[in-house]
Length: 322
Length: 126
Image (cartoon, rainbow over all chains, first blue to last red; front, side, top):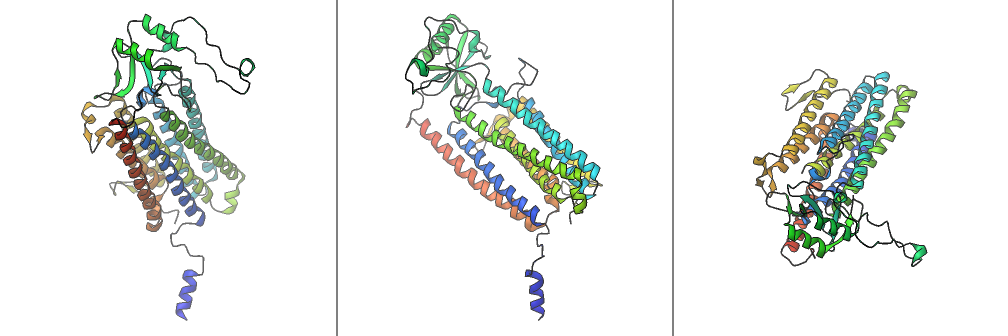
């Protein structure tokens, strides 16, 4: 008799061995699975990086821009700012959760609003980062083997191709459907032809070629003048500017691919987090949780929002610092 | 359950009076860690460039600081500190074991592919 009663109590439902509600626990397990997805991406990035460990782009040289500061070399300051914005919006989120525990509707509303603003600033910043990355900076030459050759002056400072490329004879006409094979298309032509780059390089005695190979000090190798001209003439195939899924002026195309994929996936999480936050914000304003007698829903989206911040901490380390 | 918070961090070294105070305290700590990371990333002290277990000491510092940050975000912002042991272990250890395995397999294999290129068995610069 007594065992039956105990059994009814234990297994009859209504028990919470982990002392967390169903919704919160499921949010935690969703977060575990999402964390594994992101780890998969970051580990794959690590795989590619270890595969090309002697020639991977140096993040400090790739992300050097800050909005409204043109021509100023500001490595990492902007990402540091973005990181801070996201941590800050995490704080306002946890303050909203705390206000929810005290059933303080006005404070929850305010803090949810600030969280949404922080999320929007972050997504906007990421869009700006992408734009800068895609547009490119100095331009480079891709070799037949798919490697990247960049240009520096004798002091080792980067030189933009547009500053020295010279007009050469002959014009390369873009192939269009109307003037050639109707079933073949050609993308936009590169800004400069290889001839223009070669002419410019020959005319400017103080420009050298920098390869992707890292030397003993962890810096990119700069070739001698003769070797520079030889490399460009013999192996140079096409001028590239900026980055997309095929070419990348900063180095290995894989770097750009992973940058777009991982920060894009994270940015999508932030975006969906903002949308969910807005829905919850309106529910708070309408008094749904006041009537329900509990602000646990704010806590659940809070978990998701913190998770997004957590992922960014790792993306920041592995893309920008390490 | 949800209203009771453990208010001490750093193994009880630092105790806060209220949950709100603890949140601001953790924010200050996370900000300091981020500033250290960025400063190290910009100045790159020469003494930290030496290798330890196949990776620069600087990179080890970055990774350890990242895990420290992740710990405080999970424990204090996500209130993992207040959950039961069962939930905490189910979430944290599952993730840690699987992630360590994933990282080991992929980095090991990436290093191997690099060796194959490096020893000249396969040419990729032509």
